[in-house]
Image (cartoon, rainbow, N blue to C red; front, side, top):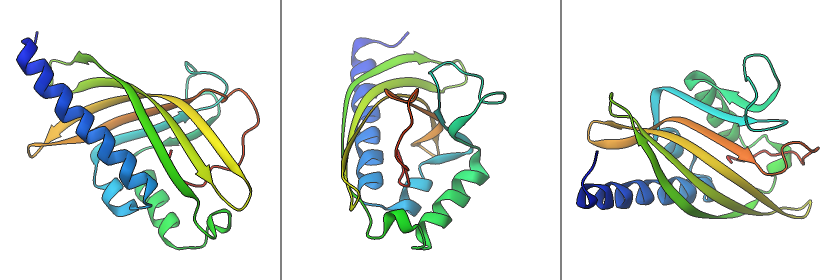
Length: 164
């Protein structure tokens, strides 16, 4: 169990990490965002509920580390026509909670996010609950797992061609 001082320091470090991740996504800094991942990272955006089995049911995104790298390379080609021009994005990250610290050192974190997307199509709000498993690698926090549960993932949604 962490002391209150250690917990406060960890919360500050985790909060800064989540804010940096949000900024990199908003600014379309794909390569820098990709460097936030561990080698075994999993990026998951479920469809049709929060607690589905991604191995047996459809997901909006269910990427392992190599698929994350491929997604970033595709975004960098400039050939995502739904992102021509790129959406203007700004996200708010709130309700950050340290959920658990695993014996191996992984830190379970949860937060809420609200993403404002302005594109040629329209202005869209995306609300989500995010779950992370963060790990220290060479002294820096990295994402070993990110699950983004969109509030409206049980409905038909617009094409999402940016990092959520």
